[in-house]
Image (cartoon, rainbow, N blue to C red; front, side, top):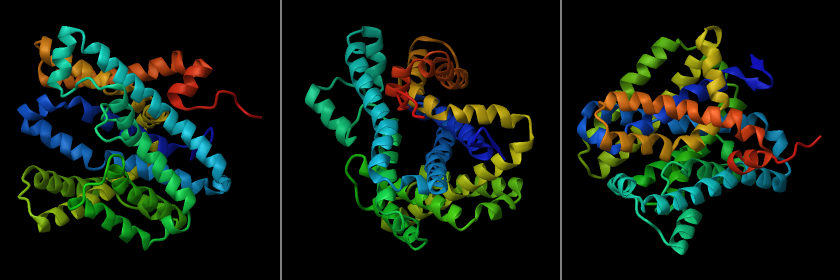
Length: 351
């Protein structure tokens, strides 16, 4: 079922995914370092939540593939939608950190989190390559742009089922090769985007929707718990590294399937509407919730408040989900220039 040209199960999946993204960012290094349970949850979430968004992007790309015949138009539209917000939030992060480091109490929190000032040319190079970038969450939009670009330039090759084997091998190669800057992320992300294109083109969505959501979720949780335990007890060695990367890929695919199947099952429940609305703002939330809103508030509360870690995570989760939506709905989406610069939307609608 679609609502106002949107696909409900995709919006619900995005809603689930963005909750996991913000939750993962509430579990800052200090909390993970002091709690094995928190570390376990963090690893569990990170194994599949971003692959989910690449899968959903690939699915929508394949669904609208006919729109992308004009490669120049595609490049410009994706540059606006992805690179413009990437540049805006990158510059904002470097400028904010530079000024915040001049305030003693904020400097103590930032330095404890590993932040330091960067010169102009150093910052520009880090933004262009994402190598050592000060904002550790903004990689997604940069990598997604590259993934889109590769798929529009090589549309048939990138949805060939046999190409999935190559892309799995590319991901596994990260066990031995450190790809530079943003390419380290893209080496992982290409597989999930192409997987979605294969799923859509071969009409495999119907087969997934026939799976029992409870059973699929249980299998995913069991497999991902195994992956998380393996991550936390890394024994090292080449053989272990290969098995680990293959296992992680399988866990991510199961996670994607479980979330999408659960989203379809929730389509008839009261929770569906709230998750779908949240999913409609998932890009806004992703761009604005980190690092300063969630991680920043967490760092300040950890340093200067007596609140327990669980309470800090819950509070920052709520703030990270709600404040970007409020800001976007009441201000950013109402002001054309802000909507363009911050969210990458067109400045003027075309007829």
